[in-house]
Image (cartoon, rainbow, N blue to C red):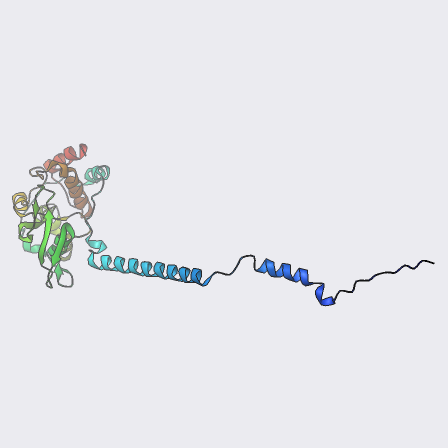
Length: 253
């Protein structure tokens, strides 16, 4: 008689899931936790980024504080095409200077703090302009686009009313209120005020483009575009010789 012996391996119950436990453990630790040095590097990298961002913001704030305001940015005249359209709509009329006085156009009024209109334009149009506590320019340089000259003393620079006050009076400003004439004489929004060589401004006087133009020919197109824009905005008229000259200059812009 043969005997069949069945051998049963008794494994402790606790051993059975051991393999699965190790697999799960390996799965969770397949990507090892960052080392302390790596964590510190990331911390300092983030810190450097934060510091750089803060410095950038500070620099931008300082630049904004020391820059002219948006309203004092040099206005760009309308395009030649737009100027031609504006010119075509202007009233043509003879000019009459009866009753004119420069005092009827209050100018160089206070714009901000202690700075008047002239001082704002000197700051805007100059390079490296330094002003004292009274807003007077003590140093800097100014390029005059009318004649191409550069000056290092504010006393050599005039602020030109591109459309002269007397010309405005002749063209319709005689019927304006004082407040409107003041706005015209201190206009920082339109291309009406510009820093130029003083004796060039004095030679121009109250002439219109029929009898005077900047000697620097490269600036003439800009000049007539600005002239027409200002006259159009303020509803001023032109005389026939003035319109003819403007038409001629604009045709070559």
